[in-house]
Length: 362
Image 1 (cartoon, rainbow, N blue to C red):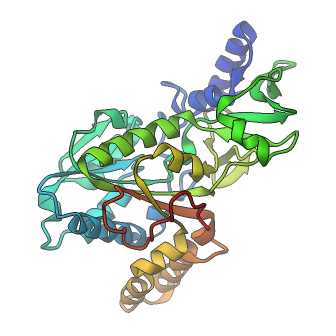
Image 2 (cartoon, rainbow, N blue to C red; image 1 turned 180 degrees about the horizontal axis):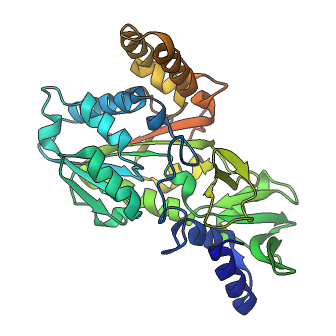
């Protein structure tokens, strides 16, 4: 039993079951035993690998898209360039390298990173030197200025509540104890106002997830972009509407039981993009494009060919595999989605098209 498991068992024994959201929050961000507060989880020596760690091309494409959006919106003389959950700083380093040309983007950009992990903050400072960085615990402390923001695999790690359909009501799934071990149970049936509309497309026993933290953050992003201009690019795995238990745990690149070793494995969920769009009003959503299609529209294949011309042998093979992993439908190309957000009066974002009002993305 991990140290955090012992803490949770004692807590639940004393005060009763806790929500899935509370369990995730403790597992990921407990101050002394939380997954993100105690380690660098990325890369071959870690537990998982994200798109920026796979290839520099991912960050280059996002950087060029953000720079073009900045130009399309009149090239504000000073703006906030922000990333949520920047990992080791790899994505932002690639964004900055791809945008260091003579457009004035760097001169206008003020770099702000939202990151709570002290381990990862240190890695970001090293990776992004000599750029000046301002770190934030939450998005609420970002400056009031045009905001150009990227969030890659950030929302999937936010704590969610799970509700199981029971007639015209819902039972919240909770973490309790069975013979001294952590186990999942449910509350008595209760009404959930935010799920009233889901009674139309669910059946008894179906599980639906809500992420209050995600909708609160999207509301903050929307308010800032609506007031000052800018754009947000959100890349994550998930789909338009939540359905089913998507909580999963990963350790050393393998899936494990989420309740076996709390604090020792990464916990993630699929992102409900419909909920993000609902929370982002009054911004205008752009097409929820599969990652592969988005990157192809931005020219990743042409960039891959340019880089390949200087490679051979194992390096070339690795480069080809990286391009496939980012874009192919059987890899990350379809599972991961890209959502763009701007003000209604802003031009379309590169690689994306604007949705019709109230239309579900295809």
